[in-house]
Image (cartoon, rainbow, N blue to C red; front, side, top):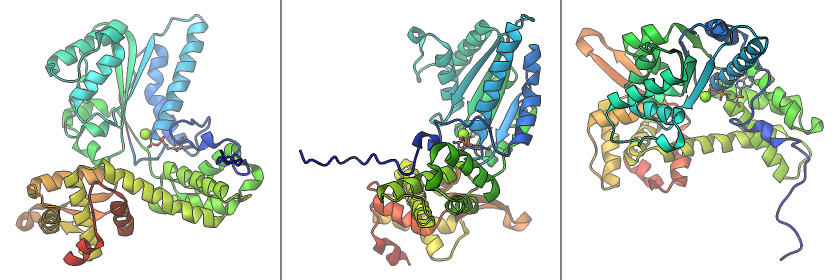
Length: 408
Ligand SMILES: Nc1ncnc2c1ncn2[C@@H]1O[C@H](COP(=O)(O)OP(=O)(O)O)[C@@H](O)[C@H]1O
Ligand SMILES: [Mg+2]
């Protein structure tokens, strides 16, 4: 063993790096979300009298504080109810069920997951093979048994796509011993627009929009973390402001802003620097963007990747926004290069919706009136170079640059 350890534990930069853990760290104070907190509070308030809360639908792009604000509200709700019950007033019986639907792509899967969450370990149901009606009946039996007020929070519920049955069922339950409230949280605006009318009526008693953050707000969010997690002399206003400005220019996501500053800290640390500079932030921005894009690409199916690749080619050729039939030509030739048959145009549209959902592209529904009819057009939502770089790193689809040239 050589005498020098490979680990560098010098702590010039971070006092607590975990503060920059986007999922793990919950700030005690939320910056600039008073309006949302007030609306949220007024919708949940009836619970503090033992009544049914309003059903709530929360929407906004990723990184706008929906999950953090929800956690904050639920913590206060639990605390206030505890105080109330300790004071010996009429006891309020509240149960909260929180579920992140990230990996759940249908209402059925969400229902099974909820059911299993509520059931004992030895009574779990399999994720396949049951009739949906059985699953829903069992779920309501469990909820009924819990009794009191049961608040179900479905985070990232837009993953269920077109099938919003679970929201319908939970928002107008016929149940005897329990009072139900539901909070649905969505990263996707079109999910809200596409909710069936009956769900909209019952779920959206209260709707709360979380707008993207501007650079001032992101700056404050970053300073809040920096004060907790960085050495006071390891940062200055300039690099923090730059991290905030980059994230604001892009998607206005606090997640992205925090990622950039943490990465800048890591780079500074690796260089044994004493402080984070604007150059570190610059470099960090590239790393974060590349990481995000390639992570998303790896999550796509092969044909999803071909579809994205096709869109990148269209962008390179200045042909975006592009309509389905034109995109289909590029897509077809990419399938050719991969010795695969192209799927139908309809399937291509579905793949593009998925790519829209994860934020790599935007789909616009256009209406050209009587003569033109309705159509969709697509645009890339990230820099085309990032997509090309990410494809180059991914094994799943082999992209040689010539595939661009040959089509260019
Ligand atoms: N207003 C805010 N004040 C402080 N931190 C915030 C605020 N909004 C978001 N964050 C932080 O940014 C990150 C992303 O926020 P999150 O709530 O997960 O976004 P969303 O659920 O909308 O995608 C989390 O680490 C969260 O704590
Ligand atoms: Mg969230």
